[in-house]
Image (tube, rainbow, N blue to C red):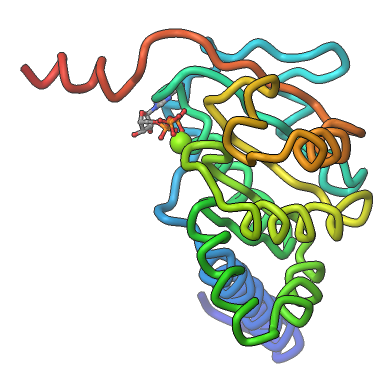
Length: 216
Ligand SMILES: Nc1ncnc2c1ncn2[C@@H]1O[C@H](COP(=O)(O)OP(=O)(O)OP(=O)(O)O)[C@@H](O)[C@H]1O
Ligand SMILES: [Mg+2]
């Protein structure tokens, strides 16, 4: 580009610097979020999802639920795109400048147990509270000890009404007590989670299965 005027040159240069800074910031946010892989909504099919009253695909994608500190529960069959959608929403949130943390619940409980040994749980929970969105993937896939359930409960209680959580699970809510062991604790945990929450139900055949069949 040719410049006849120095002012225009400086303005354009500033724009480039700002753009570059924004890209760096988004990049940092995405790395900090800890996604296991990067997923987008390109080629994502919403057909397995039944939306609840008051939410549809368009309103979900505005990410207003994060500013409203509402939760999104993604429940349903294996391989139907729960993790994929949770990551895609997380990446979109980073692009909108939000702080996100992604955890497979099993990994989080392992980390919490380790921190508990070192008396560092409260520091960790405080840091986690700085995020705008917490994604807990695969809640209920592995049974947890009483201590681990309690620690997870601490995290969720701390997020309650302060930040937004996305939870994915293939276990219906009525069976969560089988995983967390304690009926009262499970009831209190679900109660906090479903207050101000949108529940998306995923149905259908596993995409992993379909993809494997296609390869054959
Ligand atoms: N609705 C969809 N549209 C496009 N691709 C999909 C969809 N659902 C799943 N996939 C693809 O299938 C694979 C499995 O999806 P994903 O891991 O999101 O499933 P899940 O619901 O989290 O399953 P699980 O309950 O076993 O954790 C991924 O590679 C994903 O990209
Ligand atoms: Mg998953």
